[in-house]
Length: 462
Image 1 (cartoon, rainbow, N blue to C red):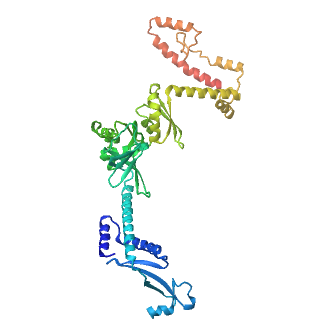
Image 2 (image 1 turned 90 degrees about the vertical axis):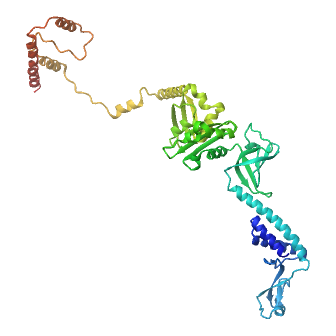
Image 3 (image 1 turned 30 degrees about the vertical axis):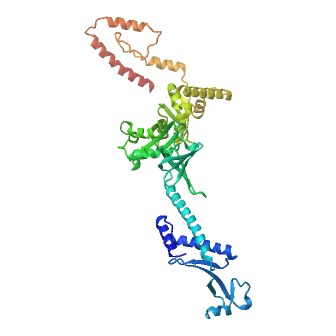
C-alpha cells in the first residue's frame, strides 16, 4: 500500500460518507485474518497501517518471563533475549516487534480491496436504510421498473421498492415505466440490503394525500382522528378541529370539492366519506353511519364499546351498506361495535322483552306488580275512624239552613247526578220569568243567612 491508497480512502469518505478511521480498522482486522490463514497463526499478532503513508506493519507481542518459566515461545520471551533488544526490559513487561513477511504486501493489497468494496456496499445499504426508515409512513413517487408475477418492483431513487399483490388495489393496472404514488409501509434490513415495502391499499395513503392537498392538515389546524378504508371501493375519514372558526369537513372538501376530487382522481375514483369527529359516542356513531340518518343511539356497554343504532325502516339497507360495508367502515373509524336495527325491529324487540317479563311474573305467581305490593306493605294506609250512622244523620239534619228564602235558587253542585232532572227543569222556568225589581233585594237576603248558618254549625260542633 502507498499514499495513493490513503487518498482513495479519503475520497470515499467524502463521497460515500464512510469514515476513513473505520475503514482502516476494518482493513487491519481483515489483514490479521489473512496473516493467520497464510502463516498458520495470528496469536498475539496485530496489523498497523500508517494513516499518512499507508505502510503496513505486522507486530507480534510477547511477554517477558524467566527462562525457566517459558511454556510457549510463540507468546513468551526470556529476559536474556529481551535484553538483547533493549536492556531496560524487566520480567513482566511485554515487547512488540515487527514480523512482517516479505510477500505480505501482495496479500494485503488483495485483502484491502475486498474489504473496501464490501465496506462501501455495506455503507451504501446503511445509508439507504437510514434514509427510508425515517420516511416510513410517508408517500413517495416512483416508477414501475419491472414485474415478477403479480409483484411489482418500483424504482424510488436509491432503492427498489416492493409492491406485493396484497398491497395493490383491485382493478388498478400499471405498466412498466408508469409513474405512481405509493405509501412507504415498512423498511427491513436483509443480507441483500434494505428492502422497502410499499402499498397502494393502506389507509395511510389516503391520509397523506389529504395532507398534501389540505394546508390546514399540514399546520395542525385540522386533525384526522380516524380513518378506515376498503381499497378501491370506499374510505371513511373523521376530522376534527379545536378552532371553532374552522369547518374541518369543509376544509377537506375544498371549494366546489376541488381538494377531495384531487385525492379521488389519484385513487382512480374511490369514494370518500368525510365526517365530523365528536367526543360524544352517540353523536360520533350517528355521524360515521352517514349517509344514513340515525334516529337514536343506545350505548349498550361503554367499557366493551358496544352500541345499537336505530334507523328508519326505509334506511336500514343504506345504514348497513352493500355487503355490510358502511357499518363495517363505521365501526373501524369510531372504534365501537355497532348493531343496526330498524325502527320496527326495535319496537318489536321492546314488545317481546315486555311480554317475556310479564310471562316471568306470571310464572313466579305475582298477580300485581311487585312495586305496588311492596309500597302497601311498607306504607300501610291508616283506617279512618268509624262514625255511627245515627249520629251522622243527626248532624246533617242540624246543619240544614232554615232561613233561606223561598225564591232563592239552590247552589248548583259541582257535578250534577245524571238521575236528577227536576232541579234543572225548575232552573229553566226561573230563567224564563222576567226579572222583578225586588229580585236584587232577595239576592242580598240570601247571603245573610249563610253567616247565621255557619254560626249555628259551630255552636253545634262545640
